[in-house]
Length: 251
View 1 (tube, rainbow, N blue to C red):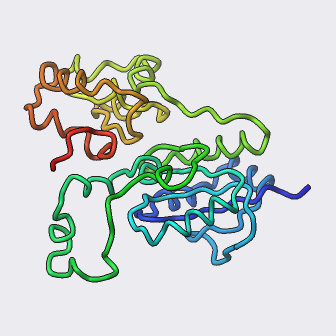
View 2: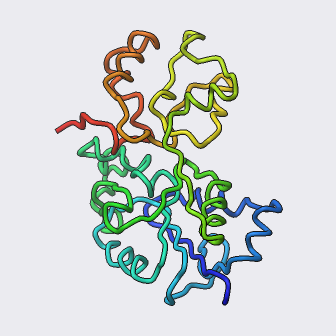
């Protein structure tokens, strides 16, 4: 039996997650290459494929209806689809435009009407096709992607973290940012990163999105009462990486 074929695809994104994957040069990645066959990866090779794929990794959000057919083709050809990076898993930073009607004029000015800039709201890949697994983060954790692929290659079920960053802070014995008179989103932010930011004195910004069913009302209350944020800032603090997960979009 041949090696499982793996292909990387990109949609609306900066392709930073692909670049993050090209930074892999450690023994774990080199060992994985002995067990898989990468058949398409735009940032690292010119070859493409139209053949069936064992594992397809998709980066970027869905923001153009014209991309639907390509996504559906990838889904038909792939046994397993992994959305990787925050744009692909939740819409990511791209989804900030969903909260601003005149975003094209705001960003592009007089060029906003040019055909190649035509796009709609930014949505996760799962809004168009079935996604089997998500690897969260902006950028994605290359080691988490490696672990997911490794588990699949060895017939194991990948484990995707769905608990708050606060748990990882406690494991590290990191002093809570609120105890330091600061604010933080760790109580509702999805863990899996190892909580390096609070450990370095930086508030968590939820770059991996929210846990399932986050208590956003409680988050806003804590940001106001304990974090010292204004009502407006508490309302919008988490928008950077969670614009599609945060309620209260303007009409």
